[in-house]
Amino acid sequence: MVGTSFLSAGTVLVAEAGTEGGGADLDQIIGVSIATGIITAGLLWIGILHRTRRITWLDTLANKVGTKMNRPPWVALPTLLFTSTIICAMFGFIWDVSLHIGKGRDSGPLANPAHYFILVGLFLLFIAGSLAIILPYEKPGPAALKITRTWYAPVGGVLMAACGLYALIGFPLDDVWHRIFGQDVTLWGPTHLMLIGGAGLSLVAVLLLEHEGRIAMGPDADIAPRKILRYFAFGGLVIGMSVFPVEYDFGIEQFRLVLHPMLIAAAAALALVAARITLGKGAALAAVLFALLIRGLVAAAVGPVLGAPYSWFALYLGPAVVVELLALTPLLRRPILFGAAAGAGIGTVGLWLESFWIDAVFMYPWPASMWVETLVTSVPVAVLMGMCGGLLATVLTGRPLPRRGASIGIVVLTVLTIGAAVGNGLNISVPVNATAQITLTELPGPAGQRLVGADIRITPSDLISADPQWVSMLSWQGGLDNERGLIVDKLDRLGPGHYRTTRPIPVWGTWKTLVRVQDGRTMTAVPVFLPADPGIGATELPAEASMNRAFTQEIEILQRERNLDVPGWLFTAASFVVLVCSLILIAALSWGAGRINDREMRAHSGTQAKQPVPLT
Image (cartoon, rainbow, N blue to C red; front, side, top):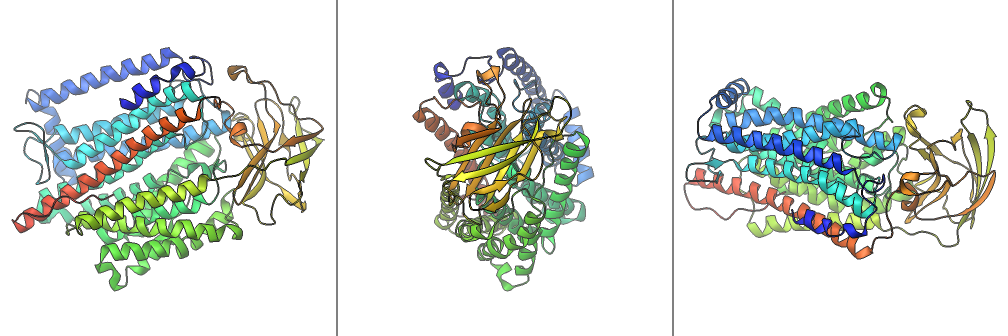
């Protein structure tokens, strides 16, 4: 609510409401809000009836599911709902990214079919957490939170609901954001990160809820059906942590390539270390295989079936092998130290093994010139995320956490290190007085479709090194009927500063075509063809037979709809609000994990234990 009121105060500076680049029409926002309010009121009423025991069907249903899954009812039904929910949201998310790449922006939450899957998925995520809160009639374990004199809720359920609510808030805030700053057509917009961050971190909440149920069940908790579901939960954690580099999966990343391996190493270290320590031999590989199955099915549904742009994704097999091999050593008996060692292995050998797959199928492989910076940023992040994975596994295996100060220090240092690595990746430079002389050659194509080849000479000729991250021609948002609306052509280097396209390039219709360069910290682009866009008041930039154009910031071309005239302080302040909310969510998950561990240790020892220790 703080973020909503703050951002609303800035609407005097925005693109006009209802314009295509300034947010959705108000009727869509009002419609979604009314529908959400009605559904929420209905669910709240059901919850009240259940808590006052005026209905019994919800308790009966939860007990039946609990019997089938061999879990407490307040774990079984929410977990079953969560599983279908997260897959639904994942499908909608990948499809939504594909549609924006292939077709461009949409006019609101109801104008994009993928949004329905995301909305339903996130709403059901919130409902799943709420169910875990309202279902228990008795106190659900020693860590439960007291709501009223007779009503206790499991910590994991509260955290799951918080993650769902955080993600849901991102939807209306996203429209407010667009009204202030225009549409930022990138996955890494602050409100977009709220959506995917809330869903991704909810997997930690699910694991904590499952562990609370395990504590409540006692020694019978480890029988096979439950353990299989825990493998799935860790596979979900791999998926949840791997959504952040999705732009790299499609080949339209708007940020430096060095961030790609760092994000892979971070996701692998947290999820795979925790899985291996918690579930034993083969767990890291099992989690990865489950993640690959789900990601593969979603990618196939979005690409070949629905005709949207294809996406690849990291395999995580190399990191999983590293974790499994290190687990054969005595280090496994010391979770935090094992996490650090596994993180170091993932950030080096694991990424090297992963690079073979990246080089084979991704649009932009990792060049040799990038590896020094990759190791400098990825290894510290992976080591600390591995230690956090060790802390998480310590909680999930019912062992005491380290001292409060040490645990807090690991979490805080991890957040700061990730922030420094991301800040480094976002630090770019745009060359001054650099130009590209582009000569186009007309190529045959269907009637009404202009296709060209391009010869490009860059001044100064030494602007680009011999081993850059990429020098490519990107054409996107051309419509799904036209090569799925996405073409990435890695240019042939003919000599210093001299490049040539390798395939026909579209310069007609709604295609946006540009030359892209990323070499070290240099990240820049030259527009080749930009269509007229009345929705944002933009005129056509034609593709001339011969043109000399200056290099500029990529964001001015890729995020053409974005309003760059808004004061910088407002964007910084709004981003800071989102960052603070994200840190609060991480802190809540940390506190919840520490509370569960603390109360479990008290129950085992029968004596007063140390205070809860934060944990990611």
